[in-house]
Every structure is written in C-alpha cells, then in structure tokens.
Length: 430
Image 1: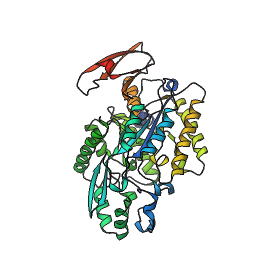
Image 2 (image 1 turned 30 degrees about the vertical axis):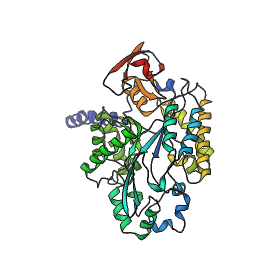
Image 3 (image 1 turned 180 degrees about the horizontal axis):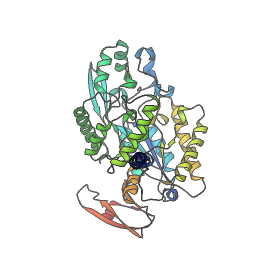
Image 4 (image 1 turned 90 degrees about the vertical axis):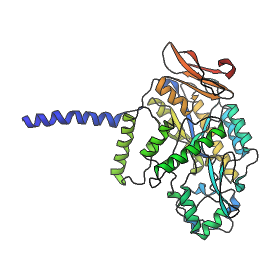
C-alpha cells in the first residue's frame, strides 16, 4: 500500500503535466468570439512554376518526368500576371469589414527562381523573373493592390524545392532537361525535393534564408512578419533559424511534415506532442493554425467547399479562434482562364456568405495583426499608404507603438479605447 501511494504521488504530477501539455491552446488577450476575425493565408505567389503556359506541355509526357503526385489542377499552375492580381484585388476591395476596411489577402511569396537559359542555370530574384515567365505590368498590379490595402505579402521561401537536387536530377534526365528548357519547374522526384528537407545543412539553410529575406525587403520595402514553410516541411533547426531572424510568427504548425518522423499512429502522436511542446516551451513564437480550407478549384463541387469553409469559420469563432483560411495561388492564377475565374467566384461566394452570417460583419486581419492581438492585445500594420492600429482588449486605454513611416528608429505611442480600430496616415504620426 505504501508503494502504491508513492507510485501515485509520483505519477499524478506527471499525468497532470502531460494533460496540460496536450491540451494547451494558444495564448490570447482578445475575445475572438466577439472579434469575428478572418485571415486569408495564400501560398505560392511569386513561384515561377509549374509551367509558364499550357503550351509548354506540347509533345511532352508528364509521366516521363516522374516528378511525383500532384492534384490534377496543379499541372497547369502558373505564375500570376497583372490581370490575375488586379482581378483578385477587385474581389477583395468589393467586400468590407465592420471597420470599413477591405478584405485583405496575405500572399505568401517565393522570392527566387532557377531558370535554364542560354545553356546554363540562371538565378532570378523578385521582381526580376525568368524569360519564360515574363509578366508585363505584374509589379505595378502588386503595388496597386498593396496601395488599396487588399494585398499584404508575407514570406514563403526561396525556391520551393532543393535547388541542388533540381540541378542534379535535371542533368541526369533528358526529359527533365527538355522540360527545364521550356520553363517547366518539375523534375524527377520534385514532389519530395523539399526546400527545408532535413538532409540540407543548417548553415546552407541559414545563408539561403538571409539571401531570401534581403530579396523580400527589396521587393516589398519591409521585412516579413510571418512565415510558412514550402510543402509544410520543416524541423526544429529551421524554427531556430527563423527565430534568430525575428521570424517568430509561424503558420500552420498543425500541418507540419517531417520526412524522418515515424509513419502511422506513432507519427501522429509524436506530431501532436511536438506541437504542444513547442507551444508550451517557446513563448516567444506565435503559432497560427489554419482552420478553414477554401480550395474551390481542387474539388468538383466548389459550392460544397465554400459551404464547408463557412461552417468552419463559424466553428472557429465559437471555439474562440480567428478564422484562418487557407487558399492557394492555384485558385486565382492558372494557365486555364476558366480555373482562375472559378477560384475568384469561390472567394466571392465565401465573402458574400460570411458577411451574411448572423452576429454582424467580420473584420479582416493579417498574421501580424493576429499575433499582436494575441501577444499584446494591440496591433499595427501598414495598409493603403497608412497604418491600421487596433486595441482588441477590454482595457479602457491601450498604447499602440507606431513605427516611423520613414523607416527610422523613432516610435510614436497612440492611445486607443477598448475594442477600437483606427486608420491613420503616416503624416499623422511624424
């Protein structure tokens, strides 16, 4: 009996600690049920792939490339053009949140590309593009959408694949060499050639990240505040490197893949434990989970996808979470115009539907705003030539630090009343 008591005395704290770890949720200072927030996270923007246009496949057999398995719609996935960005911006601008600001998309960007040009591999960094992917007016459309407040770029990666593997596998395959000469991004084994694969040296990943962040800053005039790993594949090394570069807002931790984790149920259990352990022991990082999938062009029943996303949005709010909607670029930029049109219609139907839900209009946020509200109860982000600042708490007054619009070290403090949003021009904070 004495031994039993001692065993229970030892086991009970361990069980309680394990229960706390496995049930730990995100921290927060905001009542998300009342906030009714929506964020759109959209991957693969800026990626020069899969093909420059549908004609690139003429005379080629996809199976000869042995790239892996992809959803059918991805075979003609392509880099966006000015019309794709402008058309999508128009859909977003036509829908307003309860704060009067438009719906905002967070395009997560790939910033570099390898292109086989003139008998050699050439690197192109945004806004420069490979010859096969030249898109006249694209950057003007991006700039215009950003000025409208409907486009808030964030960071996805450098290449979306291991560049050394692409070079090596393309050199070893005549079919892949022909495809590369036509601007096709796919190559043998490309599905598994993860940019942040565990086989890649940590020093190489760090140097690659530094280069990619510099490209992002030049292209968009600021550093990114959020990151999503290509193919959802990363490990603890990558998170340490991100954090050391002040990238502490991490998207889709629940979707994380690791090629060396166990398969089946043991792997899923390990994944849950690792995720909850990271949340409990890395308070300096904010993990934002996608809880709605809006991928209408990947389904034969786009209306069902929209309805499911609307249900998931309401469920997220009832759980006390912001609705974080996943919607990839393939829905809005495609070599077949009808596919992109269907994707825009799916987004339009979702926006119409969510604004008709009971409980009042939503508010459209970005990752950096959600992270600020979770961590501090206040947030600030650039939008349309000004700043959007928010106090999401019930505190009578909260101070929001406004960065110098000229990029200097000066900060301005603005006092906001409880549950208050403000839009201010840069001149107002100088």
